[in-house]
Length: 437
Image (tube, rainbow, N blue to C red; front, side, top):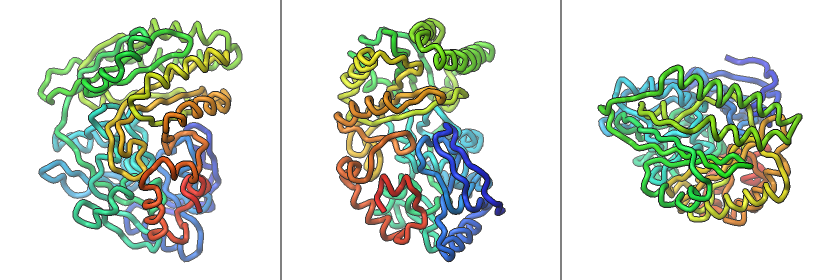
């Protein structure tokens, strides 16, 4: 299906574009035809998923491919849990698709709105010092190249390209299929507790090392961290999910509804923010429950915000958070959104923020009606000093010159891009900034 382009916005309203044309392919062959037509006319073409990136990584000034009709499982899972998804499959659809086979994704982030192709292309991750991001679970892809041909990459076919195409920023071609290593269905026991911030920072590295999944949030202007510890259990474990009423109150009324009101109030009356944050300490983050993994990993977010996130060597996380705390106090800023801290295992993907090192992720946010520039720039300076690598889908200011010093295989990735897309059919302004022309 083809249509004249209307104005497109990403979820955070940080990016917008009016594409020349919008196409909605329903098959891989239709993607190939769209790419060949774009190449023949010299018009750039980009795929867009859920628009959940805060950067312009998916902005398509030329032809915008919307892949919401390219969804589902291809064939049957293998006996060892390899599952192939069509590229537009949304993460929230995957548990239903995997349920008949008794399988699950190994790890997930806390948002499941993204498409599988968008999630891996931007380096989306969850938490767990023993687990990689979602791209680290990829075992193969089918890519539509700039000539409209299909390139299959797997552990058996062109395996040397797998570390590049598994996390390719959308710069190497249009993903048509993604093969993921899934695991037997499992349950998570979740324990969420408010704890003294200093104590959490003192023990965070040890806790991340021994827990299956550990993360924490800190509301500025308080001395409390909200910790989340998830333990993996067999699927046969008796589940004790949250009571529907309790979940509604915690996740809908408090975490989204009330928080939306308080964020809006903070825009016009910043002095109320510290009191609101201290109230949040008392009202949230003190519960335990056991449920299927995807129901614990993911949360519902309806309050619109803007976000910057950096991955730094895990051992520097406590010091970096303390620097951010001191920065906020020194500047006298009123910050309503919490700082989020997560952990991930090292991997070998060329453009992964966790490439070659155990990684701690520090994310800062601002309500979408607040200007994030000064706060983000100051925090970015702190995290860059620790060798931080910015999340590709979240706001940052770095360019190819700086990024090339942070990734040992950066030049190798650029060489693959030069080979697969020499005419830059899949380029846009963001990719030109972070990868070069």
